[in-house]
Image 1 (spheres, rainbow, N blue to C red):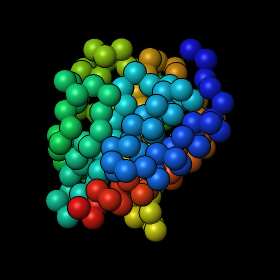
Image 2: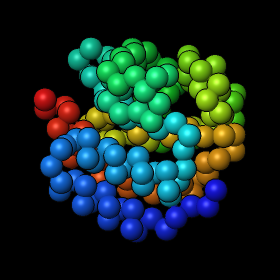
Image 3: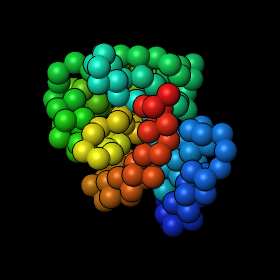
Image 4: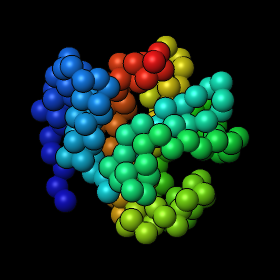
Length: 165
């Protein structure tokens, strides 16, 4: 699959942020931009609930396997330290890297996904959640991270809406 030039897709996200129907309008544009510029088979948006120590799925490309509203505990793991506390993207390019951090790795693999790029969405020093892209083995590269972080920054208004609901 070829990857589109990011500029038009970033502009589309910016336009979506201005549109009514938030935060869904923003997340739809973000998913579309990620698909075109970085690529994904599975795309999810997780909201971090600091008080309960959980993550809630708000958006998904696969609602049957990963329904919206699903919650999971954010246990103290390498992944939570790296992504949510240190606010650094996690790039895992093979099934072993997926298996090392996700309890549902078999379901992930059944969808054809053996690589992952998780990007923290951060506002004012606070981790609001993550944008999660999963694809076939070897798909993601270090060079994808700056664009993914830019897209995550454009997602902040939608996340703030969720946090303040």
